[in-house]
Amino acid sequence: MSFLSKIVPGYRPFHYVGEKIACNLCGSREQAVLGTRDRWLNPLTNVICTHCGLIRVDPMPTDAELDRYYTDHYRLHYQSTLEPTPKSIERGSKGAQARLARLSKLIAPGARVLDIGAGGGEFLAEAKRLGFEVEGIEPSVGFAGYAERTYGVKVHVSPLNKIDFGDRKFDLVHSFHVFEHLRDPFASMKLVHALLKPGGYFYVAVPNMAEKRTGMFHFAHVHGFAYESLRMMAEKAGFEWVPSQALRAAQVFRRLEEPVKDWFRFPNHAAELQQKFRDSKLSLHLLSADPYRRAWARLKRKLSERKLNAAR
Ligand SMILES: [Zn+2]
Image (tube, rainbow, N blue to C red; front, side, top):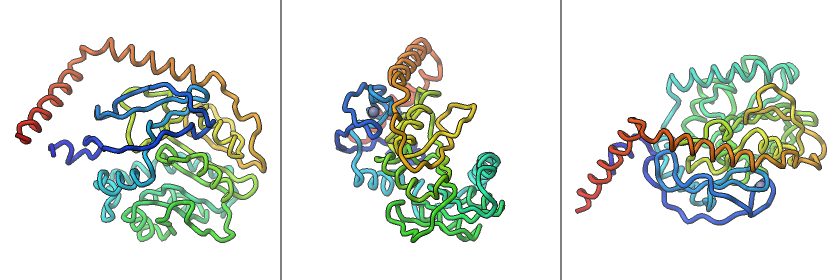
């Protein structure tokens, strides 16, 4: 194992079989390849649904393969003893404050807030400080324990669909960089819908695939969204969009009683996003003499030579 693969868990290729699936948003099987490498240049295929524009890893890893990835391969991030660092706490708190500045105006004092993917609990702590009743979900035992100990908040370590909330319903569900990790984000949005009170709010932020299109593919990010695909999925799951200026992949939605029937409101999105990827590939090609890219290629070559020598 190279030095790099020890400090950067994603650097090591992850071998999996996966399965061919239909698009999670629209059910189509029409697709086009967007990329064949992850951000560490390991083989990884990402496709775009040419009908609706939702991006996914293809083939899609199974639940068991994703579990194996998180427990073995990504151990540095997910081992149970790992806790947040001062730096991640500071960053998390700043982001939480900024998001709550907007979200706290939508809900009444003392409202119930659920954070899916609570991390070290910075959002829960900030929401609690503002007087809301808070609860979180976090897969990492270390982070969940840290949040409970430090902020005196309840954090569940089970998957969303395994938690018994009894008849508790929420006024706001918040999820920051979680839905791109899910094999079935649509089913999870419907679960969020079921957990919200009538008229409750759903804040969801994911990496914006329409903004930065190079070096962003990542095995753990099994789905890729833009504003359009995020909004269409939320509408299909029974939410209406709460208008905002910035059309990024971070939006607020409001729970409706019924799904939006004509949710397929951006029929040109798939073609437009594909074109953006083609354009950025072209500019990348024009920049291929870039000295940093050459240095990176040299380093990769050296490492693989060393691996070959070690194998002899
Ligand atoms: Zn689709």
